[in-house]
Amino acid sequence: MSTLFDLELFVRVADEGSLSAAARSLDITPAAASLALKRLETRLQVRLFARSTRQQRLTDEGRRYLDSVRLALGALAEGEQALREQSLAMGGLLQLAAPSDFGRSVLLAWLDEFKREFPRVQLQLLLNDQASDLYREPVDVALRFGVPADSDMVALPILLDHHRVACASPEYLARHGTPSTPQDLTRHQCVIYQRNGRPYDLWRFARGSEVSEVRVQGEYRCDDGEVARRWALAGHGVAYKAWLDVAADVEAGRLLPLLGEWQGEHVPVYLMCPHRAQVTERVKALQAFLQTHSARLKRPAATPTVD
Image (cartoon, rainbow, N blue to C red; front, side):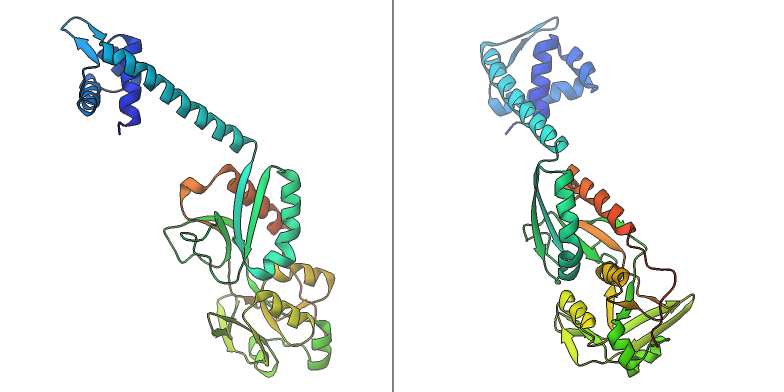
């Protein structure tokens, strides 16, 4: 198969009337242009130009081939233009993976708004707390909490200043009291999230340069982030959740953030994409949209206390 460059050079030589003029128009050397033309003729096993020291002209084979090449290049140009127009109109399919709790409790409503802004985008949403394999699954981008582990992927930032937060319902705190330090959590029922069969029961907090890790226990365990949040809402214990998951519950008073100035684990939010070429206009629009909406869900400056 001939390269696109060789075909474009062939047409340019025919249009310009000389190899040197074609080379200048393509900003390459005459030697490079001559090599490309010889490469094309060798592959086709025909002479495309009859050349002398003073002039060159198309052969009969060259004229016939030129018509075919013009049609082929024209079709490619039309296809590229159609893709650009579709991209500019924000049409096409957008396949997105997201964590289950954030996806159901927050992202669904946001995507309704995104669709109103970009009605031609087709959405395909995969909700799963397991990290999606973007190289195998039918997914364009995945919304993930935490520092990316795969350095080969493209990480598009959504919310870099984002942390986990220990929280509980007012009813639970009324019955069991309010912890004021991370170590107080050892005396509380905690909702334990499990991933890949392993309990996430070592909770980390920081206050300035001071770091505290606490091993928590609880009678409620699950491998679904939404279930963990619902158990916290039901008063079954303290949950350790990504702030975006519980911001609406905190604002509504259904959950209260705990531990005052102690800050939970840093979990920046990214859109992960397998390759830079897959960062389409649709993906860029989604990134900007999620950045704007995530930034509005800021943690309160003060943490309420329930005695």
